[in-house]
Amino acid sequence: MRKTIAIGVVMLIASSAAFSQAYDHVMKTNPIGLAFGNINVTYEHILNEKSSLHSSINYQYSLLGVKVNSFGVEGGYRYYFTHSKKDVPSGFYIQPQAAFTAGKDETDTSYSALRFGAEVGYQFAFESGFVLDLGLGPYFTNLFGDYADTDFDVDGSFLVLPSITIAVGYAW
Image (cartoon, rainbow, N blue to C red; front, side, top):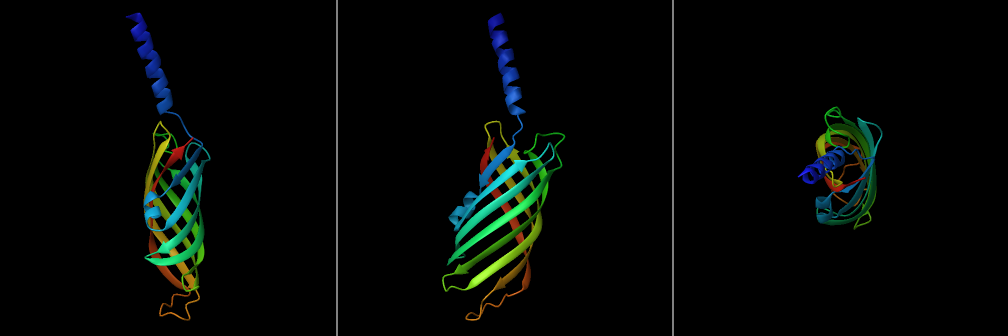
């Protein structure tokens, strides 16, 4: 009986320590983006008990059924405002962010986009290391391009587009 109680206490302590484990790094991707022609990888580096830096690279080979060849980078600062109740990188966050994308479509038309925005979201980091990140916000987007041979004239256009995060990954 004592042996069973001792094993139970040790397992309880070990499981609570594993559950409260904080991580320093997170690597994730958007699996839905893969289905629509966007390959992306995001890295998050935990700075302290309430914030992190976020960087992302992506390659896009299809955009709304049009063959494209584009590359993009993104960066942001993430502040977890539930840090007093949960270990970062878990919890509600706000993230100001900026991104740049450049590429060509199948007709060799060049384009680029410069985006600034913010996102609010929630990231789940489970004791196994599995991470689920969900976020939403506006992206203020400035488009540039060489559209002389098309009916699509957006050079210098300013749009507000959604920034949507649905990502899965691993924390360590």
